[in-house]
Each structure stands twice: as structure tokens, then as C-alpha cells.
Image (cartoon, rainbow, N blue to C red):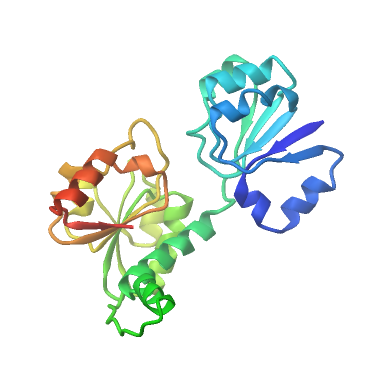
Length: 258
């Protein structure tokens, strides 16, 4: 069995997952991704399986693989938006993902980004490496109101951490976990418009789908009552790119995007 390993997070992070894979009887080829379609097309048929990240697993790639040795596609992560699931079904190639592999890591990363902005860590770093010394006054995150868009595994982990920091939480999810909300006495609202009305931070913790694509746009941002920080650790296209460019160029945005 020959396996193509492309996910950089798997390759770059030592641990039992690497040991298990390399102790197997499989022949492992590593090729750092994310790989474009044109890179995968000439080689995918040579592999029995691929452990992918955000590579372009398109119709053409899956079709080509099915004509060769390809038997399985495994995503090291949760989101399958880069895998053509209809093509996989058509060519009978099973697709797996790994729910829960990174929800704690991502929630911690969101906290890191929030602190980076409020404490000016990124600016202080640049000042220091340029050989200068300038003290920038930061702000506390205590008592800030954070809106969490998407209350899945990552959203729930984020909730636990921001509550510990003394932040106020408001959430929106079209398929809300009412038991979790009730148990933790969380304020949940009925729409994304209501979510952004009066918050300091908007954390995006939802998958990219046809529904969520471009859900953060110029019209929505203009509904905010104050300047907010948007932290997007999901997919880039959840934020409408034309709206983002317009708001940044025209400097009419009420938001700072991280």
C-alpha cells in the first residue's frame, strides 16, 4: 500500500500519529501541501490512499485516482469543502475526516489572536525587531462582549475559555445545541444580524458551506453599532472578499479584521 501524505500540520507536528503511520507497513510519500489540482493529477493514481489537508481534491483528481489505485481519502481535520464529495460518491471512493482533532488548538488560537490585538503584541514585536523601544498601551479583554458564530466543537471550547477571562458571550448557530446553551445559561440569538448588533469581537467558528459562504459582508458589517474585531479561524471565504477589500480600501468599515 502506498500513501500520499500532504497535510503540513500532520507532517510538522511530532506525536503518536506520526509514529503509528510510519510504523505501519505502508509506503509513505510526503509532499507538502496544500497541493493544487495540476500537481495531484499526474500522481494521484499511483496511491492507494491520501492523507490530505486543504489540497484541491477535485472531480478531475478523484476521477484520475479511481482509474488507478486510489481507494480512500482521509482529511487530517474536519472541513471537507476542498474535497468533491459528489465525485467521491460517484467513483465510490470513501472519504473520512477527523472530528475533534484540533478544536482545542483552534479555540486557543482564537484567544491568542484576541490578546495579540488588544495588547498590541504584533506591533510591539515589529517595533522591537526594528531596534526601537516604544510603549503602546493595550486594553483589557475583561468584560468585552464576544459573539461566537457557530457553536460546534470549536465554538464550545472557545466559550469555556472566554468565560474564564471574564468576557460576556452571545452566540448564534442555525442548528443550536439547546442542551449546551441551557446547561451553561448562554445568551443565544435568533439571527446573525442580531449577533453583531452590540459586540466587541466576532469569532467565526463555522464550516464553509454554500450557506455560510460570504455570510460576513458589507451589509452585515454596517449593522454593527461599534467598531468590532473579526477573528476568522474558519475558511477565508466565509468573509465576502469583495466586501472586505471595499471596506478596507474605503476605510468605511467599523471592523478590524484579523
